[in-house]
Image (tube, rainbow, N blue to C red; front, side, top):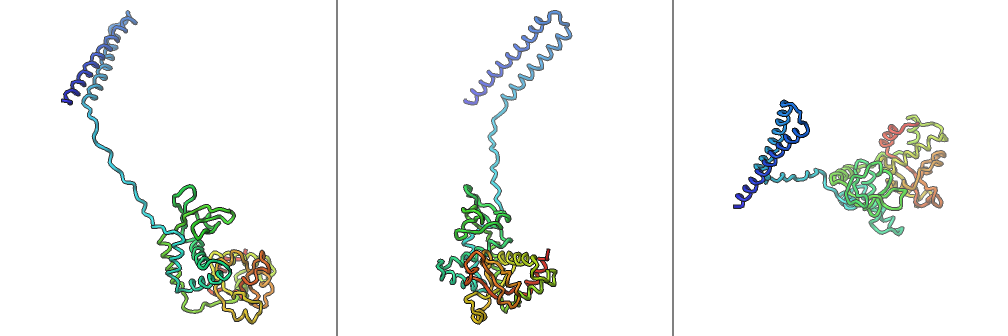
Length: 336
């Protein structure tokens, strides 16, 4: 019954619009005769034909409206495309997992020793250990670092150019530029696949035999054969030691030395050589005067000119480098 009423209503509207169309045609004819009483019959018929076409088009539009039915089809539901990306793991959790799954290896033993030493100096036990593994991840340029930049909570990749200019702080939860006082990125994460690769890398790097270490004085002799100046007073040697420090700081090369537990030569000689942590080279440099003297390798040491006595007690003496690593480094770092 409702459909009949709708049909009846549409019929009434169509009839009304048809009468309007005829009225429009009559008005066109009357207006034409009034405005142009002397118009020729041919032009009059042309105007009449135009009026007929306009009316027909108007009526056709009404017919289309009558038969048109509202569409009941809804647009198909489109499921947002899911990004196929690796799961992310918070950086502090990744650092702990890296330690736990490689703790029987060489690097873990070194990190444990440094943690005990820092704890003796007032730091909370475990803080130095966590920082070591966080830095091991952050300083690895092959591992992308992710975080959110306030006020946004969206996790995005931190560009490598930015990653090189700062450090992870707050137990690995935030990233801060070295020149800033507050973090720039928060909620730091890495890919789980990168963590697994790092675990394999450290595991495969576990040593089963002693490394072939050479004294720094021998390293400098090797450098001369690759184009570095024979004169140790040449200022280009400062460039070499600065480049080597940067490489050690970023874990691109490993340097070794004896912890400076005493100034007594006999006590230092009994102190075992050990890998120098990358963190050490953030504040300490390779002493240039020891290289100039060149008398004995025990004088080759690290130092911090900003500390009293150049950081005595925190320095490393009798610096060494692995032979194969030295050859590779010198091949990549030519004298300029």
